[in-house]
Length: 410
Image (cartoon, rainbow, N blue to C red; front, side, top):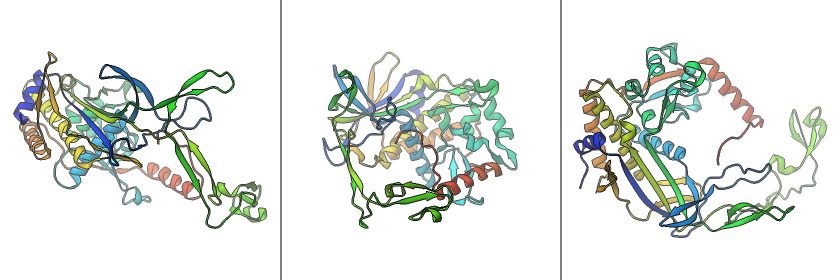
């Protein structure tokens, strides 16, 4: 069965969800080593780790590894939609902050499909719409007043926020602003990972598990600079003479200025898996919690969002699954699309890129016919001078070698 827009709109009003479970394999072939993201270890000064957990798979309890989190997948789905917009294949409402005519033009344009907190991100909040701070503009006020039962503003200005979740954390009451839960959830995990116990050397007790995979590192310096050669770092940069480095210069190793050999190292990173599995769910029950004016308006808006979510997944398939360095995946076979009824029964359907774009086009027309004023030309903002200033200062510090904190997963 091929899914049409009429089928989709009917399903949104009565069914539980659309889902797809798809197996992926490394592009290098089955059992090739891949490198999932790393996260800070629980113990201080410990090297980063992969996220390992036991999951029930086919009736067994197997070690699995997180390959792409729900948050990361949401970002990739948004990026896939934005890529299609940039080619002119589709139109989607979104907001754009344009840095190109500022003192930091290399930043380019940042959109609500890329900003960490979507329409409520500080980048947008600290920008101007026609000279007015964005959240004080007519569009910004509508976004501040939006609630799950009155979500038309987000639908018209940046509907992906309703699909992938948004929270107006700076809203009324200091964090009591509206929250919009995710209606699209996707995740990729690796199944059946070889692991080993880690042992506390002091007590001999098992204190956790880690992958049995290993990542090696080393570098031979073509200049042959030795670690015992004295180097001094100071306010004037580095030098082999302390007086040239400046007042208060300290002696450092050449490796601290990226010279010299990097000693060989071995870290417990990298995994092999039986397969990776991507699980994607578009929750119709979640969409039905969103209100847009009741009756035909609700049906048209929810149908539009369902079509947009479905299109995002198909667009990601086309973009591919090159997730990070040495983590490039391809489908083992096309996973079946399933329509999950409210009673739990399931029926399969098919949809390709052409059909998904056609379905989205029909949904877009239906939303317009229902009276929604979808902003298909980006809402364009410019950053406030103070935002430009801190970006410029950050760039200057980075160029001077004054690095800042590094947060989040690799």
